[in-house]
Image (cartoon, rainbow, N blue to C red; front, side, top):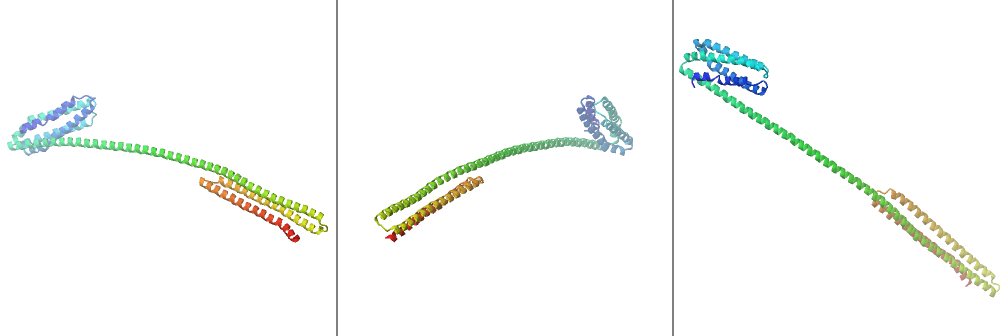
Length: 374
């Protein structure tokens, strides 16, 4: 493009944006703000390119130096009008009125360039200088456009990254919420399982306690039955011993009576035998006394055994109440039965010994008397 074409094309984008912005309504606030941002960027770039590339060349030539000063003043006025619009609310007619003033000043600036500035520049510059100026201005425009595109791409990329980061953060938050809910569910399951285990343990403990009570009751019942059985057995044994003692006593008494009868018969046959007969009666009385003493000893032994059995039963009942397990109750029952059986054996042995000794003691006087009279 020639320098003329470059300068004439420069304000086209700005003019287009002003026209679009002026056509917006007060209600289209977002559209108006977006177009105003584009206008600010485009107009700022327009005056900057002019000041960086065109005005320095105009200052070098005396005939265009004044034009450079006028162009710079026009750029300052445009910046001031743009700044004024930036500070105004964008949703009323006052904004559009001020935009019209900006457009009026900008169009006057463009006419001044086309009518006065451009002919003077073309006249003052050589073709090479004009070509170089056009190239530099076009390059600046291209760079600005590229920078704008890069900025938009970066903005889009940044927005994408932010969206991705936001999505990642949201996903992380959702994952955290899911994990928290899963942890809460797991905690509830664990609490339920713990409660179930505790309930089972309580039930097991209660059942164990009930089993101990049943075992205690069964053991107590068994102990009572065993005691009654042992008492019955020993009672039968004691009765048998008493019967034996009575039989011995009866036998001894009968024998004494027989001897007495024979003695009376002998008195009738033999005269003068009263003195030997008196010795026989003395031996008979001694045998009867021994038999009565044996019966008393057997009764005493029986009473002693019954007392020990009663005490053992009472102690066992108290210990059963304190048992904490079936094993303890079983061991206690086994110990109790062993104690009762030992007591019974000892008492039986003692009563048998009493009976045997009584038999020997009762017969001794009679045997001695028989030996004397032989």
